[in-house]
Length: 325
Image 1 (tube, rainbow, N blue to C red):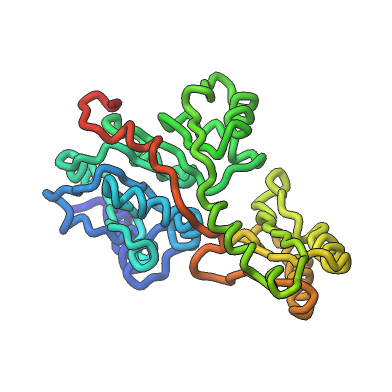
Image 2: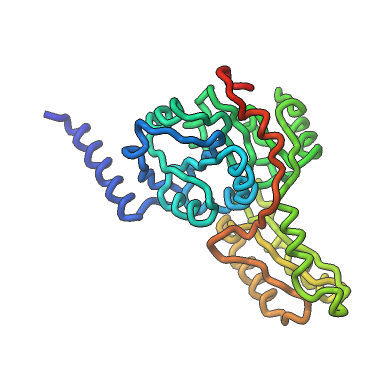
């Protein structure tokens, strides 16, 4: 007869499974409704994997890489491995990439034992990444979903990856100065910031063009979010965003494109009222003033995507037996 503790564990497990199937999963948690039964004994034909165990609220972090990943997929094959069935549906619909939901690490081990995957990419520092980072037969590369002076860009977590793809030399220097006992020159590889290409193209086409007699310069205002705590409060919307935008528009020589962080307003409660007030006042400005809101409330990330440079990836996708090519 099972012990009371074992019975309690079984009840909790069944209750959690029922909650996941009903879609009532706590915020920030993947539903772990995997496709393990169908995947066991199979293989994945791709040579590159993107590991993304996050729930739908973090989709913006991978969405900005879709065009880059599609280009890479055309050359080497890319599969996205997830732990959330809701995230998987969105990835399949919007990316055009193959995606699988793997709930159990044993299933992932089984799949990889028969798959040619040699490289794994990560777009954040989710602690759940360690389920995959333990695998020594893969080369693990951090892409992240932004490159800036934020503390997350110089996190000690970078040491968990074999390499980090960064925007440029400024990122290498920043990491070298901030992360102890880490060879940034050897392990940080500048690949540019491919998302910027298309973003700049769109900014140039927004509003009136010079061909129509409008010679105003376009200013992109893309503030980050307010952060979960005061040490990460990098956002400017609540403090001086409105004054910044109004000063540009009142000058008459500029038009402004506003692209906020997808997590805007989800951080500290104290920032939400002033943020909402500022954004509401901006949206009341007439189009003729040069104000353009490029904000999307939900769905695909406001971060634009673009062409890519995949050459640094190719060096790690050859056949090998030691974890390096």
